[in-house]
Length: 122
Image (tube, rainbow, N blue to C red):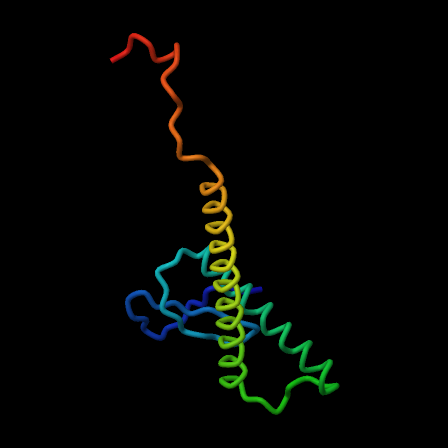
């Protein structure tokens, strides 16, 4: 279970200690405990996914990697996922803009001729 750690080590402003898969980490965060807990869950799931992919490819767990390398790889994996999501969101936005532009182009610019509805109004 992921939890905030209470240690004697003095912490700076905005610093928190979290545990990720049994490894204590010091992080800077202004997020609340719920958001930070969710972020740690996502990070832990990323490490589990990486571990599973490593096992599938090489047949055994990544025991030769040191913790800092594994953490860096996890952060890079998450950054890559974020970039892909941003690109997909940008493409989706561009597609919507093109559809809206096409719809607006299909609408005639002609104003309606004055008819009985507008008679007598000035």
